Image 1 (cartoon, rainbow, N blue to C red):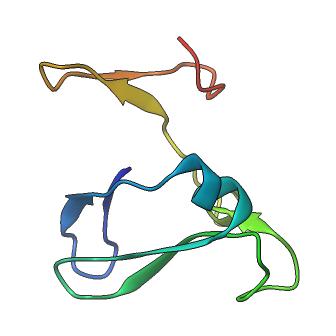
Image 2: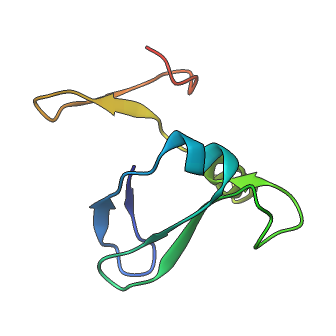
Length: 85
């Protein structure tokens, strides 16, 4: 996962497992400002319902862009957000 922190504008990449994202509670710490970003919360620690990054961004009127990174470092975005090419 690659994202830009909205607090300090630091761009960073992190690896999380599918198991953690889809079944656990996942936080990522920004290496720039040390702010913690909620990525998913299926254990309902921070909310009364299960929530993912897609849900959080949708509530703010934003969209998550999904894609893949090849060996040369090129990013290919998926048009339909289905997670497949």
